[in-house]
Image 1 (tube, rainbow, N blue to C red):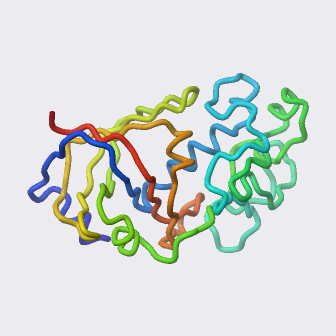
Image 2 (image 1 turned 90 degrees about the vertical axis):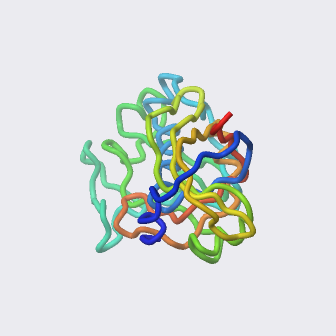
Length: 228
């Protein structure tokens, strides 16, 4: 992976505009699930400013995936016993088998929604995303066959209310399960609802130093805007 990143700026090309599968490396994939957790945030729910409004019991990611918080896990970044309200934290699913089980709430947002706090004032701690693919980035590239591997993202083009997603990207173009050449000058776009439901694979190449633990992610289709 380090070798891939080192080659990033050597002979980078653009791509024709198209729709294709996209892999987010494990360094970037947590951002997708951070958007999911943010959309389930209690304040966003009671302000009605989320693309996952009133989503309890709804399927929002493939049923092979879950998001589980383990705040007491030893020797992990983000381990914590209490939230900012002083409420004792607990292990819990926010999403189980693809279905939303709980919003992410501190005491205030829980009160606004008429629900019980999930002890998440100040955010989540040590959330893991289920891997549903036996392998990391290299194996995922082979499984994808043809598409884009994204190694860098630029800009903040995410609308938290509508879910519209559009960001600049660098990466590598893949054909026949192998990297062909580096690419730059791209914009990748989609809607987070579709992107999350379109996740085909989550790999085992997890960065254990992260507070949100997830491997590389393959999304089945996004719009790539490159050269005209």
